[in-house]
Amino acid sequence: MSLSSRVAAAGRAVLNRVRAPRVFRLEEIRFLNGIDIWYARIPDPAQANVAWLEPRPAGAAFRHHLTPAEVRPLAGNDPATGRPYAHWATGPHANAPVSWPVAFVRGPNVPVAGPRQIRFRIRGITPANYNGRREIKADSAGGLQTDSVVVQFNNGVATGTLTLTTVPGTVQRLSREVLRWQMKRLGEGWQPFAQSEHTFFFVLEAPLPPLGPEQNYFEMFDWSCRWAQGQGAAAAVLQQVWQRFTTVGQPHDTGLIYWRDFQNGTAPAQDMAAGIRSVDAAGMQQYAVSCKVFDRMFCNTLSLHGIRTAEMMLQAHPMIPDGTALRAEAALDPAFATALNNARGPNPGWPAHFYHIVTHASPASITRIPADYKFTIGAMEYYKPDGWRIAAPAGHGNIGPNTWGNHWIADVFIGGAWVLYDPSYGVTQPWQDAIAAATLVPPAAYEAGGVTFSVVSRMTGNSLVVPTANPQEPRLNAIRLFNN
Image (cartoon, rainbow, N blue to C red):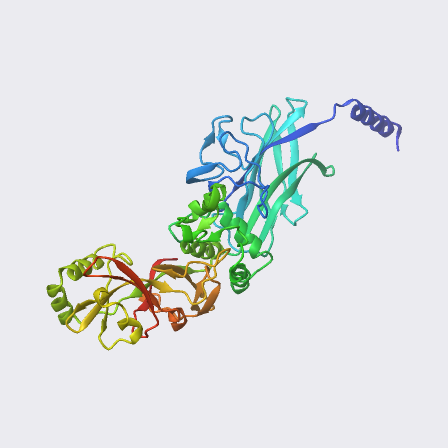
C-alpha cells in the first residue's frame, strides 16, 4: 500500500472513531392490501387460545365492546399524527403502543386487493436531523421475508414500502411474530436496528362474504386459522375445522355453550357479535348462544378460507289438505283461517301460526289426547306443532333442549357436492342440494326424533304438550336463508 493510501485509510479510521453513532427508531407500520378484520369486542389475549394483540389507543382497552362492530385499524387519519391509522406504532404518539393483527391470503395465491405490503416510518434519533440514504428490509423466524428498499432521510424521517416476498404456503396463525428490521449504508453490511411484534393470519383462499349477515370478526380469523393450522387444501381445512364441532357434551373450544340454562329460560345470543360479547356477561348469560351462533361460527370460519357454505333453517312442514279442502275448512273455522293467513304472510312464524291436520285414523298415541283437546272439524283433527324432538340432544357444553321449533344447520359445498353439517350436535351426512331450490327436505335421520304438539283445548283454553312418533306427522323442511 502506498504512503498516500495508508494516510487516507488512517484518516477514515479517525473519522469513524469520532463520528457519533447513528440511532434509528421504527415508529409506524401499516399493512397494505390485507383482509379487513372486524371487532365486536376488543379481545383479551390473557384468555386461553387468544392470539396476541396490543390495543392501547384511547377507548380500546381489552374487553371493550364495539357496537356496532368496527374495522381496526380505523379508516382515515389518526388526529394525533395526521397520518393513516397504523397497525403498529411506538414512539411519541398518543395512541402508542399498538399492534393490530393483519390477515392475508396464504402463499402464492392471489392476494385480496394487491401485493402484501408494509408501509413504514423510521426516525433518526442520533442525530435528530439526520439526512442520508439507507437500505431497509425485514424478516421473521416464522419465514416471512420482504424485499429491500432504499429510503431517503430528510430532517431525520424516512418512509417507504416493503413487499412481503415469502409468506406461508398453508393456513397459519402467527401469534406475536417478531419482524426483525435491518438497515445498511449503501455498500456496507446489514445491521439490525428494530423489532416489531404482530399477529398474522394467513387464510387458504380469498374469503367469501360472511353469512348471517355477519362480519369477518377477529375471532373468526383466530379460531379458523388455529383450527386449520398448516393445511393447504379445502378438504383438509374443512376436516380440521369440523373436528372442533364433533365432540359435544362438553365446553366448546371457544368457551361458548349451546343453549346454556335453557331450562330456566336464559335467552341465548342469536348472532355472532352478541355471542362474542357474551364472554363478558354475568351468570348463566355468559357464553350462552343458540344454534344460529354455532351454525354461523362454523359457516363463516369456512367462508374465510374461500369455502362455500349456506345457512339453512329447519322447521316442521305441516300436513294440510288440498286447496279445495283447505278453503272449506277455513270457512268452517275462523281461527284456522286466521292462522292460515298469518302463515302465508311475509313472516310465516313458527310455531305460532301452523296447525297440523291428521285423520281420525291416527295411531293411539294421538287419539289418547283428552277429548276436549281435540281440534276437530268433520273428519279432521288439528294440532299445533310445538317443536321437533331431538333423538340425541347433547350439545356443546350442555345436554341441549329436548325440542326446538326451528333449528339452524350448515350446508357446505365441498368436492363438487353439498354436504349437510349440524354444528350444534356434531353430526353430518351427504345431502345433494340443488342450489336453485329454496326449500329442501333434509335426510330422514333428522326426523327420527318425532314431533311434540301444543294442543289447545276448545273448551277450557288450556294447552297440553303431547309427543308423538307417528310417521304421518309433519316432515322437516330446510329453508335456505343465506349462501355465498
